[in-house]
Amino acid sequence: MTTPTAATATAVAPAGAGRARARRSPRRTARRIGKGAAVAALLVFTLFPAYFMLASAFAPRATSGIDVLLPTEFSLRHFEYVLTRAGFLTYLGNSVLVALITVVGSSLLALLAAVAVARFRFRLRTTVLILILVVQMVPLEALVISLFLLARDLQMLNSLIGLGVVYIALSLPFAVWMLRGFVAAVPVEVEEAAYIDGASWGRMFWSVLFPLVAPGLVATGIFSFITAWNEFILALTFMNDSDKYTVAVGLRQFFGQYTTDWGAVMAASTIITLPVMAFFLFVQRGLVSGLVAGAVKG
Amino acid sequence: MSEPVLVRPAADPASAAGRPLPPPRARRRRRVPLRPWLLLAPGLAVIGVLLLYPLGRVVWLSFQDYGLRNVVSGEPNYNGLDNYVALLTDPFLWRVVLPNTIVFAVVAVGGTVVLGTLVALLLRSLGPWWRTVVIGCVLVAWAMPAVTGTYVWIWIFDVDRGLVRQLLQAVGLVGPEGFNWFTERLSFYAIVTLNIVHHGFPFVAVTVLAGLLTIPRELTEAAMLDGANAWQRFWRVTVPTIRPVFAVVTILSTIWDFKVFAQVYLMPGGGGTNPEVFNLGVWSYVRSFAQQSYGLGSAVAVLLTLMLLVITIGYLRAVFRDEELR
Image 1 (cartoon, each protein chain N blue to C red):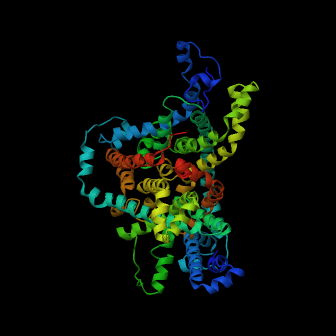
Image 2 (cartoon, rainbow over the protein chains, first blue to last red; image 1 turned 120 degrees about the vertical axis):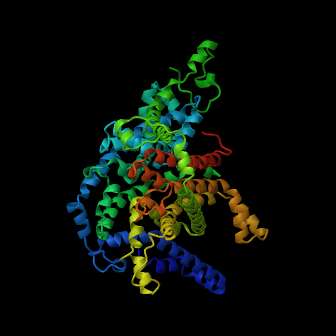
Image 3 (cartoon, one colour; image 1 turned 60 degrees about the vertical axis):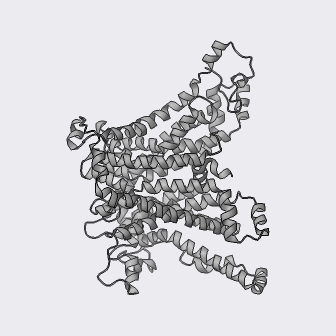
């Protein structure tokens, strides 16, 4: 990954037949070189932070930026420190529990709501859809004050279940919006065929509709997972007890008053980032189509 | 319970199952659709209790002098519009917080959209294999969680041992005494902007690329025959054709950049020790939780929400301009 430049330049200006023509027209060669340089610069820019995070995490000592830049040795001691002595496993466990509550709750509620808005016409349906869109825009900074007071009144501060329930609400609007498309994509004829075969609505829902939208459910579940896993401001406010920190908040533990153990911070960041990246690459298509709704259809 | 009114025969209740029309009064009763509301009820209840009620409560709190005492006792303490008067007459809002929020958002959105569009144009000109590779790499930047991404940028710009400082010192641009770019408002926000643009441009690139690929090739070819150069083709053909796409990515980026929180709060000084770098979100949070002044914090939060609401209306109009909700 440190040498995308050479690889890019050769591949964008392919060898063989193209080269003879390119030699005849210098402008074309210049354009190809320019494009190769642009791709190389873009790859360096996009990948650099991720690369630097990994390089620092695996370096034996991360005390100087320049030393980390070109690694000579490879060490797992930062990971060992983070996972054993620093108690990061507790935070990981907390985050997994909170994310599971979020995924199960939000997928279930989103499926029901998505069927309602995709399969039925009823009064206020447009209002409900616009509400779902608008509510996503509300800044968490505005909600955190009253959610904190609400959680305090309900004795839910420092409760992982309480945090998970709040995250259900945070991830629900986008999950409904995205699943709506998956439900609408199932042909109505499939449902009608189930009715003709004598199925009740409930039977049709579980035996026909549910299996067909299952891939969409996986995708929305992953987005809910990412929402819960990455969320910062509410976890910061709700969790005062360090045993209850989620990973996003637990990272702050590695910042000393005077010095920071950057190797440990980067190792912990790597552990947090990898599952998100894996999931994200898997579902990004749905994110784009969900966010831009009708605008891209052109 | 009525038959589910399927989507296609929407306007005509009689065609639901091809049955003859029931008598008028019965028909009206049958048309009250219970099932969609039953399906929606749990989701709407959760949204109502955990998103809408808190939103209402923060407005209500913003008309109170609500401190730690009130948090403990739970008693309201109204003071009318005092919080808003104090907020809007505070020079700190106009001199520091609003510029930090608005100027930053404008610069960051501009950078994100321009870079994303350039990347989309580059992606369109690549062959399928390279396009897939580059999109995959670009997604890595997008997938980076805000919290860890911010820490990586802080480490890159670390004042004592960071890469940027050491490189600048090696070429002689920074003396051995170093330079703390986290204390200066401008350099602080330059780093935030870098962080946000890096994290935000992949969405713009992927979305604009999807739009670019819908443009019929004939349009571009016709413009070429008419002698338009690449610059003219972009502004006269590409931009007008996929204007809704640009509207959506610009507005969504604006919404996201207005409510940036972790990327500022986690930076050195951004968590409360350096008021010069506060934006609306951080100011509201610090006012509420560090200074225990929940009423004033709520007023700041309401101001931020109102600004976002205006932008959101623009978003809805861009998405649904000529398309009904399906």
